[in-house]
Image (cartoon, rainbow, N blue to C red; front, top):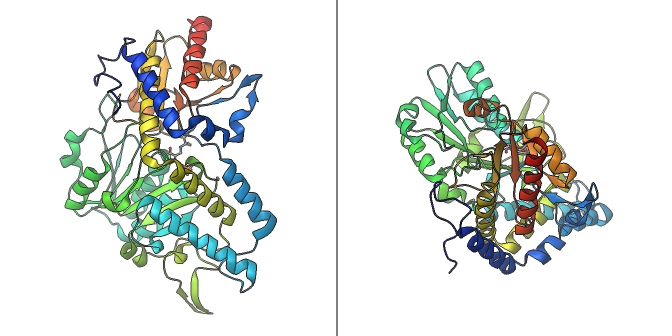
Length: 436
Ligand code: C6P
């Protein structure tokens, strides 16, 4: 049993004796997950940037890729390449089996009931657009309401603005508290029998806030709303079980879970997916085509028109193997300890303001400094080989709500170490020296 790492209040977070304890705990968990070996599986972590060893803290934008994925994609192009769901030759049949095996792997990984509930997309953005076009648009009408929250990424806002404009439905936005939590005191006001869709993020890409997805889903279902969860920032950091959450849709991106870019996951409950119109049409999504009529394929293939991103699917399979080899509970425990250490160490830097709650949170740590613009912070850190993101993080309405033009954001993944947090803090002191 690991001792509690920190005092659970903002006031209690000081640079007191807890720091030492929490560092020891991170180091203990690092040994448990075999951090050194794990890091050696990511070749890019061994490179130097501007003459300094790379410290990659931009994992919310995209994660780095393990060697097993690079090898699998290499092998696919070297020895296995064909098209899927088309040929009746050896390569095509073998590859089709592998492609479908990855679907099964994804189903297991997110706890879906059946494989046909998993649709491969380009990523989170495409997943939400698919749901907006094929599910929401044909069903919504004037008088209906779509509910999103103030902490949504543009990907989970703009598609709903368009659905609202085209259907006459009203788009409503659930407020957040000053601490960066959803303000649930408004939930009864915003969720009603007019609410047809409640689309919200599992984890905020700016605040790091983990939303109470199960409770929100339950509340939404009580008024008959369909629940769409943006899982982009959760999928690689928390164990996800869509059946336990009971959401109707769940979307995520491969590249944020150690997988390739251009591949994503859309989960939808089978009866709902079956009733939906296709998103795109063409090859592969049909059972029978006549000149004047087409019978569509069953789910999930109805939603996978054209030659898919086979390389992406193969890589995604390896990424899930990697995540399973570490274990999602180990990942969330390690990252929780690491981010709590990072949070406390950040508070040591004079003039720093951390945006978002102390808990419940993941390893997305946004902050501002009174002496420097986030872009300047990012630039000084870059000179030290430290990659973070600075800007509005594709969440402009949230930034407006926070009264900030931008934040600096360090975001953590399973391969980050306590030493990298220390380097971040050292570099922030340098920012202070230059601009302070
Ligand atoms: N956020 C970030 O740096 P795509 O681009 O489709 O893979 O993911 C879009 C997306 C949707 N929802 C959330 C919560 C996200 O964080 C993102 C991507 C990146 O924060 C790039 S803007």
